[in-house]
Image 1 (cartoon, one colour):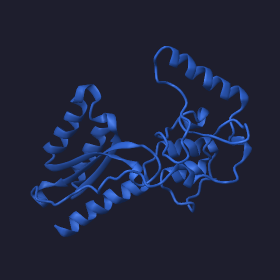
Image 2 (image 1 turned 135 degrees about the vertical axis):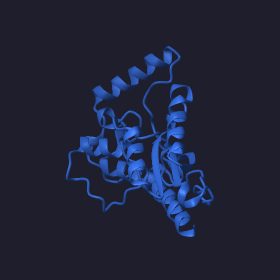
Image 3 (image 1 turned 120 degrees about the horizontal axis):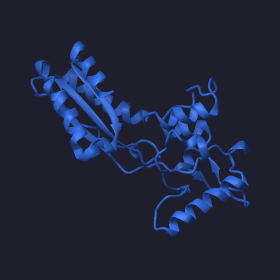
Image 4 (image 1 turned 90 degrees about the vertical axis):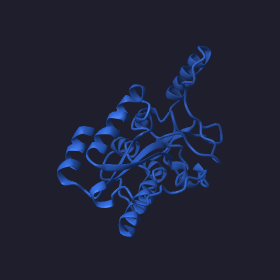
Amino acid sequence: MFFDVADIISRHRPKAFFLENVKNLMSHDKGNTFKIIKGTLEELRYSLHYLVMDGQTYVPQHRERIMIVGFDQDVFHGKEQFAFPEQKQSTQSIKEILDPDIDEKYTLSDKLWSYLQNYAEKHRAKGNGFGFGMVDLNGISRTLSARYYKDGSEILIPQTGGKNPRRLSPRECARLMGYPDEYRLNQVSDVQAYRQCGNSVVVPLITAVSEQLVKTMLNN
């Protein structure tokens, strides 16, 4: 997909652009993939600014993604004064995005809960770290993935009264990505909503970087 993006940039020559991808883009193929991306964009005469940022500054989720911002050298001559927003440790906890009255359908069945525990134990015995992620309600969650709809194993919410843990609801997942509650989710199934949230970006993080980009363009 990157070369399609590069082609669009080449044809339309935006004054600036903003790309986002997974953290591992920098280490993929021993760094060769990112080297090609960086070189291609620089050949198009754009000066680049890039940084791996964690969404936990804005939401109670550990979600690292690389941000790549480019400015047209024919416009800014490499003198743009761009800076990424400051990163901070999360000041929110997962319990702040949870609904107090949640539908029972999000509680794991005995069969699924037993399977996840057995799976984790099997890998623990082999010295592997694979397994479910039980959330500390006063802490932050793991990264929400597009496969969350399958079993919710990476982010499980503990419940009292001897009940099995539960997965997040689609609305709670949307909150974990920084979407306001006014954002509509009920036009699609729960499965599609989970996929969309897992594939999404942390909205306030993208907003903060975008504001810095616009500020830089206006100042220059």
